[in-house]
Length: 168
Image (cartoon, rainbow, N blue to C red; front, side, top):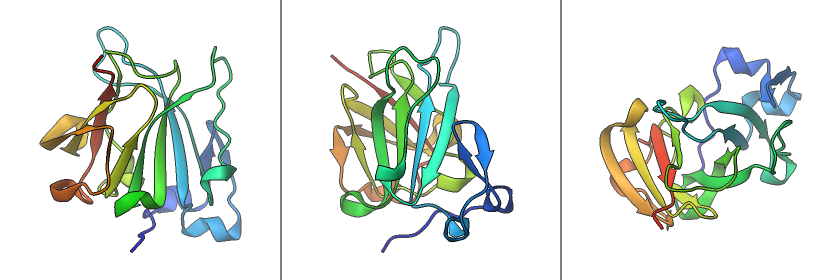
């Protein structure tokens, strides 16, 4: 059964779209079904990737993932789904500098909207390995995923942070 993310009062009146707040339609106030976040690669001396933009829509097809100043179009890194078998609401993370490499991307918190939300995951492009963590900032139980997982088992509805990279 699909469960919509819980949107607090701070986002009930606005959605984040490319860093600009826009008023949602009346149907979007209960929370959009699909969100996209663009993050930068981990820079030397940093422990996590910086968020560049966020946007949400009622369908994955309605998302327009573009970032001004990027040399290339952002590359899809992974998608989390709120149901098993890649169904339900989705949360896709894109790489600002392109696909995964050995350093990869580290997303320290899925935020209050998507914390403890995921039941399945697909890795995209060159991202072939991910560590899913129970708590923010890579704490608690950890599960390694290679490619995809249709059911997160012990981490169903418990993923709070994730790191993805290319092992080759």
